Image 1 (cartoon, helix red, strand yellow):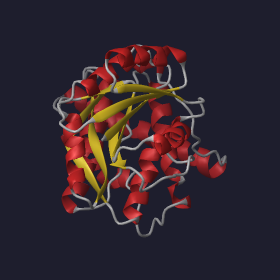
Image 2 (tube, one colour; image 1 turned 180 degrees about the horizontal axis):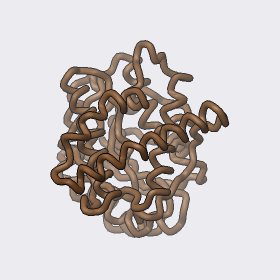
Image 3 (cartoon, helix red, strand yellow; image 1 turned 90 degrees about the horizontal axis):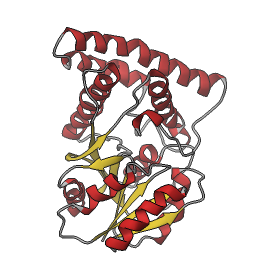
Length: 296
């Protein structure tokens, strides 16, 4: 049994598409879909789907954040594989099959899918989202996967074996820390690049900066729980500098080259904010429900 958890927060306009994308998967193995949300609007829509298809279940969480909600529902799930996704994205055709396949190897502990942007490249923020998904995240994961190196998972679509890591800290994003905890137990982390998940990204500078700053901050506290000498971080300012050259092979025209060049000072600004908040103000990542309005 595969247990799919879709975490959502005030996403009544998108949760239906997210549920349908999982219901339409062609998979022999049985699976259930749990919609985990604190708000009535989202849960009411999930209930309607549950009336039509018994695979769809709901779980009401107290609204204290995604990691807190996961700690509440995970002990109740009996399936051998846990799949995590969000209520404002949707999985591609056969995505669940591609995500589950690597678990045939008992040494595999976590599997991550591949986020793909739905935004237009004609807009600067849309182009940035494609560049960061394709040349950035995909390029980095593919490189590490081919070398057999450790890689982190994408919170938009990933999976892990149930009842191996039963608890994880809540001041680090779960998709950042759980793969490390599995690796410490000797499990492999696999990149299933054919397991695609489609995402809308921020469409203005304020939300773009806030989203990326929050993601970066969620990695800054990893050292509290993981031996970084044995398992160095994959998402860091240093790695962004060392691997940033991939960005220059991505643009296909002068406008895209300009968009690429403008991203570098913005990323530097984001990392400056991260270091200021974490090192100077001592404000670290905290578990909480976050909503990016421009993507809804």
